[in-house]
Image (cartoon, rainbow, N blue to C red):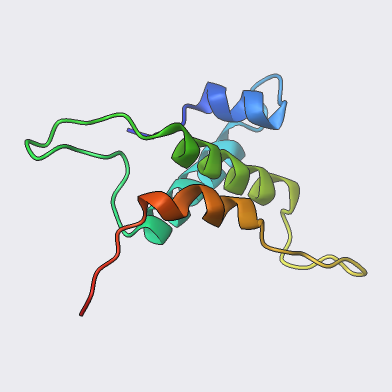
Length: 102
């Protein structure tokens, strides 16, 4: 189960039709994986009994922002352009991040 549905992802990307569904699904999975890694917790979230609990909206928005970046920047490098990490993603996720001490 994903946190963000394909319909939510397509609405965020302003994509009509289903020609890009496979590509969007792949990038959505990668975005959710990146967010889960940043948070150091699996998605979707579960309570102590293993039942799925709602993911906070800032986490969903961060997934959509990462997805948008992956969709808009499909190549590793663009000649003559500078790519900057979207600091809003970290700003949205940091309050939910697990912090462990070794």
